[in-house]
Length: 65
Image (spheres, rainbow, N blue to C red):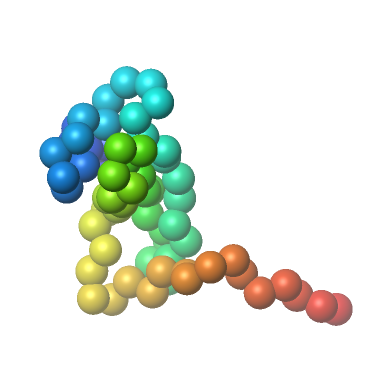
């Protein structure tokens, strides 16, 4: 289980309502939970991104059959 951060990189508190947007970032390693601070838009990932991560930059391509 990934523990959510208490503060964003800029120091804003992330606990409580209307302070954070929680999401999921697909990656080649499986994925990362993301926390976006609504005060400054800083994003924190858990587990942290490393050099081997291949996060998707945008929506997935649409398959045609």
